[in-house]
Length: 515
Image (cartoon, rainbow, N blue to C red; front, top):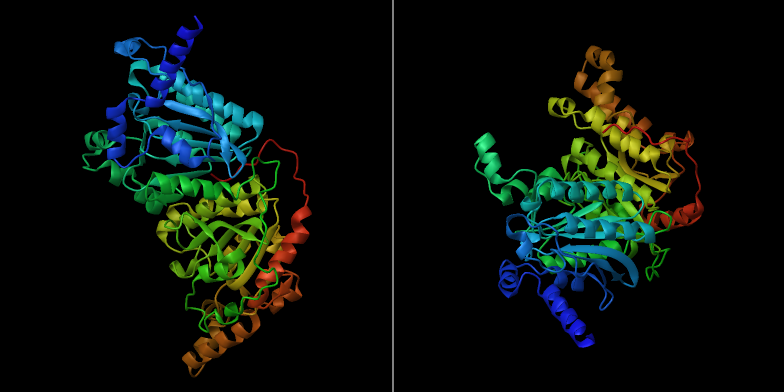
């Protein structure tokens, strides 16, 4: 009896490891894609995976499914370690029923999500699925709904990361969309609500899945994804890298690493970085690289809304979230996409105890009918709300321009900034000198014998008064004026003092962010 049981067990285990069979595995490899188990092996530390529901099979007998039962039912779930830290994971198996979601498939994912919440560990989903299993009808749709509910319940409690490693269409896209970060693979993954055939039927547009929802589209136009990767292996390596910055849950601090970069290191190159002309751009990447530990910056959404930079770095080994205006693109103005991109990141950092460092060089909000009619008031307010709501340490360095309402929005002292400083090149004013002079001194300029010379003189007068950080410092709106080369040392000192920051908010169910 024991021999028969063991024989059956070995057959089941072999069937589970084989997935959909050799031909389908070969087809998966031919597309440049790994199998579900190969992905888990690359993602997790060696031999750390503990599987759940290994032999689960579907219950449906519709349309011949009853005759085709594959152990695991198209998804591999369990827990493991990344750099010795625990994580929960599911990996959909496209070689089994195209990775389609059934009642039992959904049940396995729901179970591992529940376990992640119970243990307080991050959840990583490796998505590669043809969508709902049509043969199960509404049962599969209900399965998606159970996952969406869990995504929302876990939001802000444990980090949730999604890797799109193949198709992800229809209702399936909303589970990754509810998670914190989305990774996509160029050429082999796509996300869209309706496929090319439906689009052609309804709108008569001819479009491919790649053009409709490929990695490049979502990285640069829609802003749906956060990271674009070359292949499965690169994607999983990037997931591991991001994981290294994150706490296990919202009650823990992010993991601090030993820092071999001197905390008092001067970045002398920054003293001469800001151009003489306020209209000449400079690359904010250079500021970030010069200040952060070992010049490392893990940028997020680098191809979307490039007028603002977001990403993760370390100061004295402590992870920090970085938000920075980028004058190399649209002069660093805030617009709809930049505001929403930064707001979402600020809220993530706040949820998971990651201090926020803001480098400010913002001339204002982007003017124009497209922005106004597109809702820049409502959508720009998201960033203001995010900064005001955040209770983590907030450190702001004004490198150059800080004009108008955009100054207020970018973590100003009056909206709750904990440590706000300016470089000597900082310009804190309602607007730029050229525009301000024309408003304030309009009559003087018009009545002057030489209006051009008069305007230039008034612009100079306004610049002398406001194109510097001294008045703001005198009124306490910035805490100090520092040399650019000393920024690293000053930030580390402030961050160390703020490490024990505690704050409380008014009792409420939740705020009403202008969505």
